[in-house]
Image 1 (tube, rainbow, N blue to C red):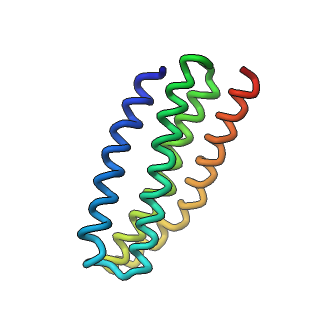
Image 2: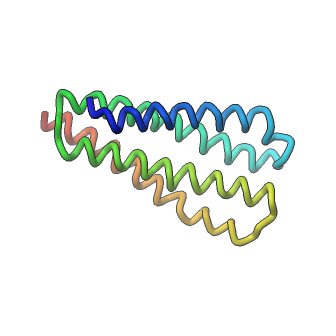
Length: 128
């Protein structure tokens, strides 16, 4: 197991549960339903990739390769860019700060990181 990445997954998992609870209980009173749907997408994709990160960190014991380290890093970067940009768009909806709308430009970058992480994972297992 790659302990630092597994610990990161555990911490991000706890954060994701907190973000989900905030969205379910407090946020719906602050933002319109369209913004809440964006927020829920951010939480959902973050949670999916917390599990991907944890599993990849555990696979490191069997496949201790740079490509698995890359996969872990890509999953983290994907969470930061994809989910992070959607969280910022939700803040824009809550505050009306217009320049925050540009955060949406980073969402596809996060998606590309997610895809790269999954491809690195597949490549590692195929080679292994």
